[in-house]
Amino acid sequence: MAEINISCITPTYNRSTLLKKAIESTLAQTYQNWEMIIVDDNSIDDTEKVVLTYTEKDKRIKYFKNPGKGANAARNYGIKQSKGYYIVFLDDDDEHLPHRFQSQLNAAKKSGSNFILSGYQTQDNTGKILSKNNMGLWAKGAGIGIRWFIKRELVIRAGLFDENMPSMQEVELSYRLAEYETFANHLEIVVSAGQTPGSISKGKNGLIGKKMLLEKHKDKMMPLEAAWWYYTIGIGYWSLNEKNKALDNFKKAAKLDERKIYYVAYVYAKIQSRLNFLPKKINLKILNILSSFKFPKLVKHKSIIG
Image (cartoon, rainbow, N blue to C red):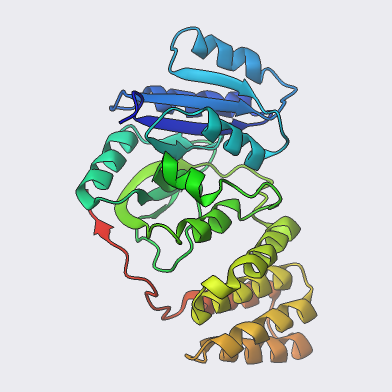
């Protein structure tokens, strides 16, 4: 086993104030055998100065400049610099809960899995908890990389993050990881995700990322899983008032859904696009409810509690 057991990879750009909280949450871990690798994507604020105040006090915190460009390149560079047996990811606007490393390490040992997917919560900039999610995922793909706990060798074997993905990079990598290891669901919340404006998973970049994901991995997905991705792309276009593109994706989803739920959603959206009998906000709510309505568990993942 490596001398360092856990490497935490944190890409950052111009968020020195938020980054302090991420670093402090790492220092507060009950499990101590870790390193934190911060990769600065060439910030123009005081990020370097802030991080160096921590590296001087604790050698487990390491600072690098990104030789590439963008968060995916920063993550990949951080992975290459890491020494840990396991890797976790933490974005600069997120925070570990104090028990994270110990809890995930216990779950990995208990399950024998090299890829753990834990629960997470979201919080606003005041620290107020907005939502909690520890229900696990039940298909091949696994997003929200800050909940991952994964063997370093497995990430390298799968080929690291695709630096051409404008969004959905964790999900895209997860489909390549699925060729080697089925993740285990750890049903405990271990990290808090911030709600920083300007997320690349939303808007046009989010749609481009999802479309690229389907182009690369549709053949690896079960029909209903691919249908769900087409459906969420449709919702994205609907929210942007591009209804023809939305309907096209709803139709693709309907063809792959034997349950016929997405067909109902497609017909509803088609009628609504012509008659406009409900406000956009209500339409999106209905479409979102139908996206996961009676959605089955597609893959039998191990479940770990505690």
